[in-house]
Image (tube, one colour):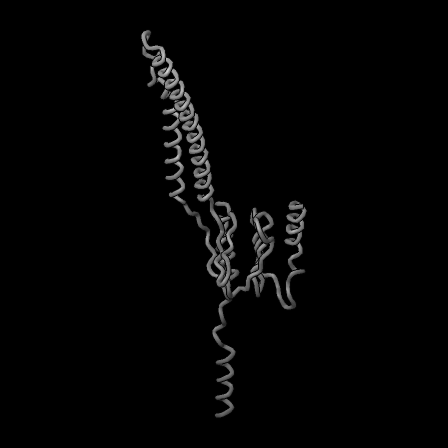
Length: 218
């Protein structure tokens, strides 16, 4: 079902003109790996079928701010990953040095006191069981810490990936993945130039009108 919806959203990128209002024309188009961005004389149309949420978004050009390629390094995630890895390795090393070695292998001999000998054996067995539980608990905590280390490491690596970020006034910003090759090819600069308002003419027509009025009045 999700694949069909994605294919349908992709098909719309080939029929953008059907989404244009009367008098709206397409000025620029940028086809990225994970998105298609179309700039018309009125709006920015964004097709993002590979993202969660909406497949299509339209933003009026006056509400579109800067267009930049950003790469944010979440250093805190790297620190958390290293800390979790240290904790996990430390717990594994501690579990290898079994705490049961601290308990005497044989209970102290007490031939004249059989009840005491039995009591020492029961205590030793109980302590050994408790230490075994602690050992397995340490292993479980170590594996959990290592799992968190991997999760934080993956998050840090993903945070280093470059994104095309389009600031939107009055709404959520639009961010899509972008490759270094696309940035080097000038995709960001071309998109920014297409969204920016066209320069106003020097007002030659108005000045000519004033000159004409002046000549008539003369």
